[in-house]
Image 1: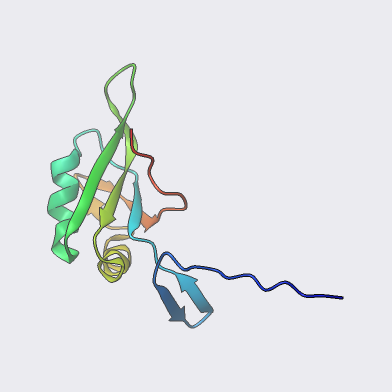
Image 2: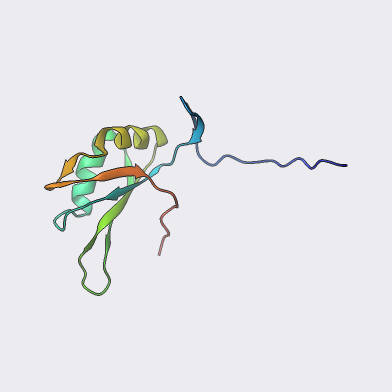
Length: 109
């Protein structure tokens, strides 16, 4: 019986927490956004935690209105982690927002 060894390349920093190791994403999902929240609002709030590479509010293509969620991508994963810890369940433009690491990277168009 032969065993094959596989090499795994880590693309994101690895953090050690009380429940073990996990990957730290640089991209954050922000849910519960009000209709008034725009890209500039996200930049203002999230840039307090570090350099933001991209901020995007997802829009409905038919109505051109906010779909109520967006994404923020940080240059540094540790800055993203601090933003998630600090901003989850806080208020932005009159709405309580949900801030968590994004499961999948935002696709570029």
